[in-house]
Length: 361
Image 1 (cartoon, rainbow, N blue to C red):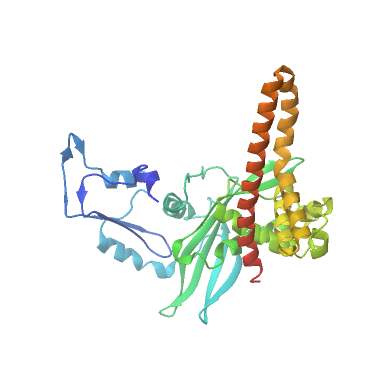
Image 2 (spheres, rainbow, N blue to C red):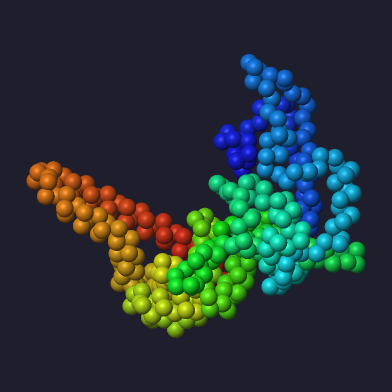
């Protein structure tokens, strides 16, 4: 994903056999940029070849390296690297009989050395998160959470940067805080290993202990991140009495909303979504009555915006002729039914993915 650097076409003009290599050291994230090609053109129809280094320099930290020998010298400093901030969580991931240790740290832009480090890691957002943008690091309401793999190499403890998360603290009436998760990135070599869920849960655990936090929100989550959020929230809510098996069949209750907010800082909208996931998990698909009740319950929730529009339409209908009114009502009904069914099917697909992961617990 390079359109945020090289334009929507993601093409670089004016070179043959072009190869752009961007290398980063594992711990300090020192950056090496190499541009290799078998030939270039001065211009075609007065259009010059793209200035690759100039385009990259707009997004990478100033002073990135272009000499491989200098980069190799920088690697000697990796052994002395120590993560920034306060260690808040440590866990292990086991695969193929091998255990790997990961540590999560909380820090701020005021931590010595972290500002430069952040400038080196934030360009990853442009490559791996669509429509990503840089944040204002001088705003003191930002908090940063860093994930590192901790390992042994040649008799010393080493670290490899694995991902990070940024949180902005908003005001919530009366005198409370509403943290919003803004950016979450796990680098490709560490993806599909459960790190995003682990980071999210570690952050949640800190929030649970803070009485000043009202609830937790997420800024415009992607489908993949929403799925992780759903999994973590559903896993937590499964421990609450209102979300137990039989109670789910009686619909979303005030007790569910209240317990999810008090115990896990989950807002009402997300609590309702968790309820629907857990109710589907509880529903026997071969039981026509149970499944029908679930489907109607979800569609009633999806239909709420149409009910509001219906009240507005009632006012408008006073100014329509009978034939116009009938045609409009038929058209609106068809559109509404089509929308309800397609949205329900999309939700069902997403919910099933979360349930598959919940079933592996």
